[in-house]
Image 1 (tube, rainbow, N blue to C red):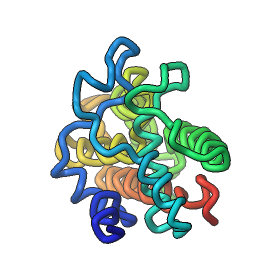
Image 2: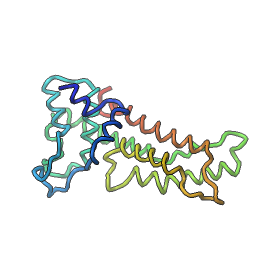
Image 3: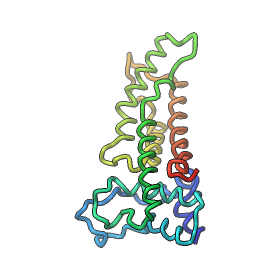
Image 4: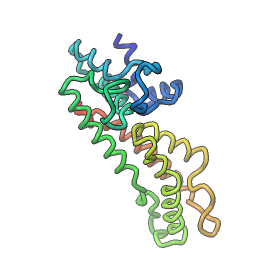
Length: 217
């Protein structure tokens, strides 16, 4: 059973991505009028956590991705206890989950700020025209493209790992900064690579932080 659960809720980011690539698009909490009886909501992670706890299972390798998966189901705590909810959790795990959820979304929000430090040109180019262009284009790109993807009010920051993955994919396929800005120019190739690396590292950093965020470290 544990092997099946680990395949459903992987503990590494590459395995998570492989699993996500095969899965249909996930939904946030359905509207209040949508009953659990109107559709198959699948196996809910809160129920799996409760079952594991009954078996005295406490290893973070499986519990961490389960708690993260549960966080992607929750947009708020105002809906009735039908469908996607946390009522199956114990009082201790409910507290763990709520604290971890707030920490996760705070980390996601803080990480979504424009990394202007990533395009600082080393001397002797620090005052060059290209350095100014790179700073400008990064701010423009982050404001127009990255920010709206990461902080979309429709998704309510419920899928930070997936959202950072989409930002990374968009940056790789569509190019960073889009259309040329100042005087028909854009980010230099070195700064583009720095931004791509920053996005990838940020996503991995959030994933690596999940055990600590949910109190397993």
